[in-house]
Length: 260
Image 1 (cartoon, helix red, strand yellow):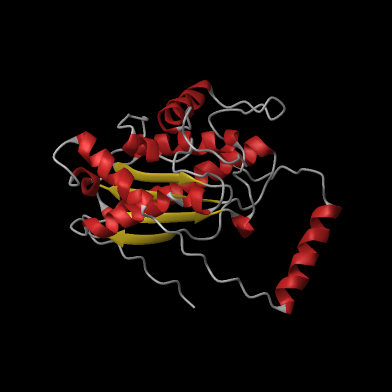
Image 2 (tube, rainbow, N blue to C red):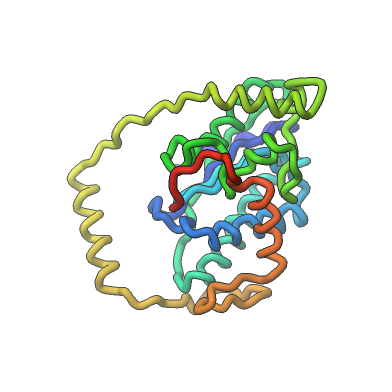
């Protein structure tokens, strides 16, 4: 069956969800999320796109983007998924698919400010809903960009956010109150059929048999080299991540529960 054609209405923003292959926790470490921040920053330089919302979780990520030309979104996401997969596979010494086959995309009309704010709040509430944080601040979410009104080098304020008040301070306070009213709706327990249980056992046994890390001979060359033993990334990538984390990370007085 052919895949459904993506809806790419002109002028819209898009809520993007991208999951790790088999929903594995492949981006649970801070270093791998630093790579994703750097790749997203590179994508902004390569494509005309604004980043309104961002949250990196352990096995998936959320983005709220607005490309200047909506038709550029597939090309942008293809490049982002390819480049980040190549970089993260190189960093971790693994091979094969890193992301699921296709990202999820939902268009949001520019005049639908309520939906834009609800989507932004949903993205920022992910760490709290997952039990990773007690509050909304997280080093890999751009909630701090909205609450503290600080530039993190990647994010821009959503037009819906700027319409909350006549001043930026007023917008930040109203958005913070709006987020505090968020109530997470738990999802129903997934159904587990006998085939799923059998597949899980087969995958588990296969991983046990092949513990040796392999490198795909067909991997394309990247314009940099990672030292896997030292867990190093290029210095300019590191600085992009540091700036983002400083603007959005947890500080004294912020509620925190645990790290991955």
